[in-house]
Amino acid sequence: MADFIAGFFAPWIAYSFIALAHIALPARRVEGYVRDGRTGRPLRYRLNGPLVLAVAAALWVLVGSAGLLSWDWLYLHRWSGLAGSCVLGLLFSLAVVLPAPGTGRAFLSDLYRGRRENLQLFGERVDAKMLLYLAGATMLALNVLSFAAHHLATFGSGASPGVILYACLFLWFVVDYLVFERVHLYTYDIFAERVGFKLVWGCLAFYPYFYAVGLWAAAALPDPGTPGRLLAVYAVVFFAGWTLSRGANLQKYYFKTRPERALFGIMRPRALGDGERRLLCSGFWGIARHINYLGEILMAVGLSLCLGRPGLWAIWLYPLYYVALLFPRERADERRCAAKYGELWKEYVRRVPRRIIPGLY
Ligand code: NDP
Image (cartoon, rainbow, N blue to C red; front, side, top):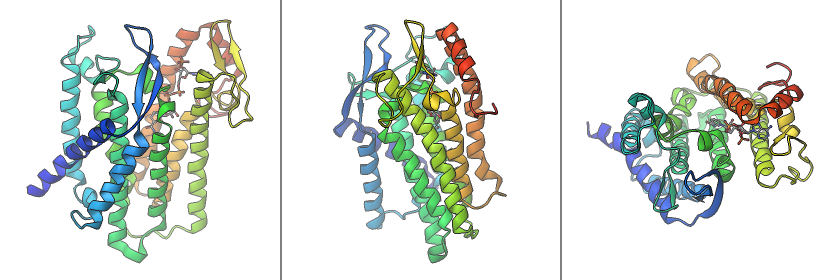
């Protein structure tokens, strides 16, 4: 029982530490894309994700080296950790939603989708959405490290190179997200979603635990003996996805912030305009209207394949989740853009007919 309680509250302690580190450590101050409903000015943010992650990982190394906790402690306590994160996610959602004025929808809908569009605390020092994403990303990195440590501790020199590759690629995924935190201020979650259970529980419970579901399922299994050349192919699949996703996000970010800037110094943006608004129709945004979603799915497929167990159904949950999330999201974003951009969007659809998969869909 004591063990369960320790595991249950471990994420609470980790999230408190991450919040304190985020508040206390130096940060870049930047303007975002979302505008303050009252003043009309862009919201301002403090971003220090890579630094917070580095401090949390260093602490994990210190605690492990000092023998205070085993390297795979989070793996051994994953079920209680997940339970603690779920409860915290629910409590935090209630704390954010209950004091806010209702939107006119049913209470459960308000609780799930949220009431406030944005929530900033201590002046502009903490933005709830950005802190939640930082907390989830950092906890995900710690889980991946701990799950991989369990595999290494169990199999020693016989450990699977695929598991090590999976852990490295997942850490790349998290570090990349935090390095480009500013770019994410221009994404759907930040400008279109409210702060409710979906976002809070999603960041505190779903993101750090479900995203690692492949390694959760495979960490205790022996090396499947995947040939090195296949692992190289899987890494290529991952990086092909990363290129599409990161490239598209960056290109749109530059287009919104410095419209004339060429991506990587070579890709000059071509845009459709109606005199008032403009839409990119070149580079990544000329291949398909949401090529970034294909990139995300490819990254997940590459990661899952690295584990070398295509017959293990649990490893496919992660890529399938992206399909279930992003295909409907593309439809929702399409409706939003069609309403916002009108004829201009129709012209864009004529120029770039594919939604997500070039030549197919
Ligand atoms: P997008 O980055 O595609 O953003 C869509 C918005 O971009 C539109 O609403 C519109 O906003 C603008 N836009 C669309 N087309 C154009 C165009 N041609 N030119 C200029 N602006 C355009 O989607 P998301 O915000 O959903 O996703 C952002 C990233 O986050 C993606 O890479 C996605 O894959 C990733 N993601 C990752 C997840 C994860 O768990 N790892 C989960 C979900 C998403 P506006 O009206 O402001 O112009």
